Image 1 (spheres, each protein chain N blue to C red):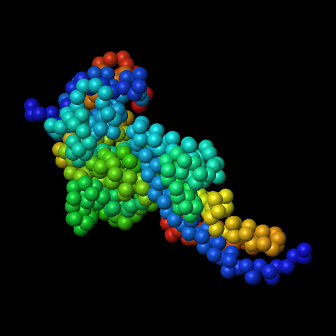
Image 2: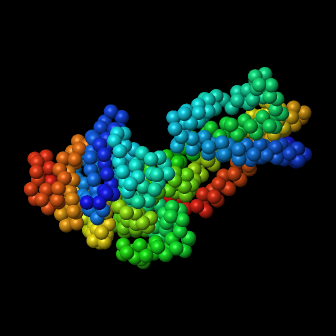
Image 3: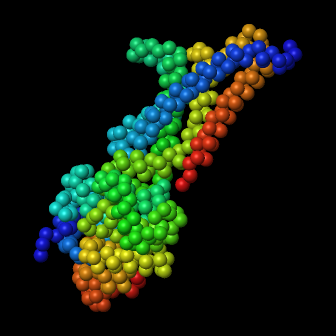
Amino acid sequence: MEVNWLIILDFIPQLLKGAQVTVHITVVGLLGGVVVGAIAGLMRAYGNAVINAIAFTYIEVIRGTPIVVQVMFLYFALPVLASIRIDPMTTAILAIIINAGAYIAEIVRGAVLSISKGLTEAGLAIGLPRWKVIRYIVGPLAFRRLIPPLGNQFIVSLKDTSLFIVIGVGELTRTGQEIMAANFRAVEIWTAVAVMYLIMTGLLSLMLRMVEKRMRIL
Amino acid sequence: MTEPIIEFRNVSKHFGALKVLDEVDLQIHRGEVVVLVGPSGSGKSTLLRCINGLEKITGGDLIVNGMSVLGGNKVMREIRQEAGMVFQQFNLFPQMTALENVAFGPREVRGLSRKDARDLARELLAKVGLADKANHEPMELSGGQQQRVAIARALAIKPRVMLFDEPTSALDPELKQEVLNVMRALAAEGMTMVVVTHEMGFAKQVGTRLIFMEHGKIAVDGTPRDVIDNPPNDRMKDFLQHV
């Protein structure tokens, strides 16, 4: 079969629909992941022994197992264990939340701990409650250091959505696979899929760089 | 004499197996300028940091302005509003201007309005001689200027006692004086002060009392001039020769 790039044009609407699903999972998943990660990270940085151990266990379990296994567990094992059946799309979003949350927790913890302890002490010493020290002093400083590693994680999570192919979510990779199965245009289709991922990750990088630029890094 | 404003009652502090403060008894009264000296590891900074709860005591009791440091978080916050602290490394909030650094406490802790807090901050910056630096960020100020802002920040919450933890140790010799001058003025106003320092000149001139610490205990407690000119023991004599 000869390579015919023009054939891609026919499948662009279909691929865009797949990309849309990818973006949807990524955005919702990462929003949740940031919330979970912030909570778990703060638990690690500020919690007592018990709270710390809970967050630590979550982070280690997730970081220590492949995301595919986590997805399989959510989709196939959870119904057996707890009679909870969730649809593939929800599973996908949940998997990103849980997975990204663990990595973001470590990013948050690292950023918080990188802020000089003296600043926390200075805040406490003027009689501020700890939450205000975190909210007004450590938080804003840590946030700036958070952006670069957070950007990395966003890109990783975006690409991780491609493995939801295993539970049949119609995201971009799955869409490519389906088109390919029908016409065997491997070169054209996988090139198009790759380019679409590049565009998405490129836009994400660009957005993060803009956020970074708008903030003075201290 | 009236009630002491700070009272250590048999206070101990352990870091794990290490005993940093060993059953310390100490009373500090209003208007005193207590200078704490001693070799590194003698417990002088720890003693100071126990007063505002940055270190938790592990034995005995410590009363500040009638409140025990063991009284829980809320009481601790009240104690901290009575005992301002100045740190060796200044620790100014880098994301805020000098003015915002000083105005932050009054606003968030004392509940002053934005305008009142800024007026107070401006007044205090003028007092430490930095009225013209109000809108500068900490990074744009010299070490001595940063430390003076830090003093203004601590004063802004209207404390009854000021705690100084080696306030000039991180400064070049020329910059030390501008900070010491501010502290001198503060002492002249009658502020109660506890100062960990190696500045013997300051101790002699401004201090009303000098405490020499060793191995977590108060080894010498006397009038600065007396104990500096005639050290009561060899250990302190030896120490004074090295500062």
